[in-house]
Length: 228
Image 1 (cartoon, rainbow, N blue to C red):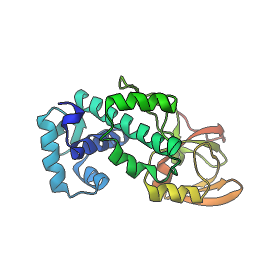
Image 2 (cartoon, one colour):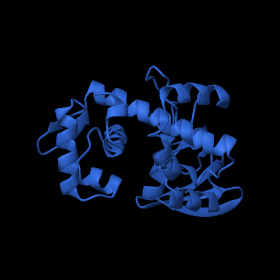
Image 3 (tube, one colour):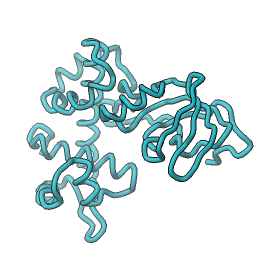
């Protein structure tokens, strides 16, 4: 089954499963329902449909994982999504906070021929407007080495490399605090439920949940630097 033969809903599921799998190792039914804003019962039905077509493998009492076929499909969808976001920001001058939801609709109608033309017109971008890498036509994705902001320590200075939570309300919240791609952030204090920062000379706070979606490189380390 090719991606063009899948319903929009099934493509959304494959993409969401990929994101959860990267984050947690597996996609649990409850998390998938929350990610897609649907009831758990509908998740079960769609997962069964995907499993029949060799897209996912269900692990009882644990969750679902993409098969190699499913991962290839998910990367194709993510490629279309992130190039659609670039189309909206780079050519149509849309704000970065507005493009994720629109790209969710556009990604399903972009054919491979159109993608080739679009990528050429955009100058072969390596990442989406939020810094997340764009998979190649061959399904390869080059991930830059970076860390969640919640892994940074006090007195460290970081530069923002990507935002993984692309939802409008989250991006507006970050923008209001001066946090965007390439922003310099000084960590003042890290607590279990929040992190205190200085951005562009102003003090601000992010909850741990919000900070987990902000990925950074350390440009000045404290004595308690991240050890990887």
